[in-house]
Image (cartoon, rainbow, N blue to C red):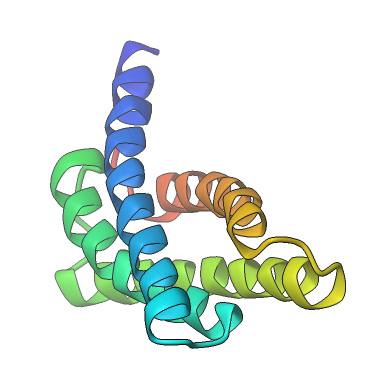
Length: 128
């Protein structure tokens, strides 16, 4: 149980850093570059996934011996694409359909995707 708690804390630190990157890029693209918030959210999510992969596989999850790096990266990308789909659907629903503030919608979407990320990566990528 202690190992799981430590892993969750590490996941939280990496996730917080990835979230800061995600929000900073999204806000910069929306406010400074004038992109649509839904497009900005997709781009920022993708940028944060690259950071998240590198940090998660180094500090959070134990590499599985039965997966090579290419397979590991492919699984991570596939799980991240599912997270991106969740993110984009929630952003579209909140911003376009419900006309809510894009930052508030992004906070809610981030919480949902964070849960997806931990559970799916723990299931398919972690050796412990």
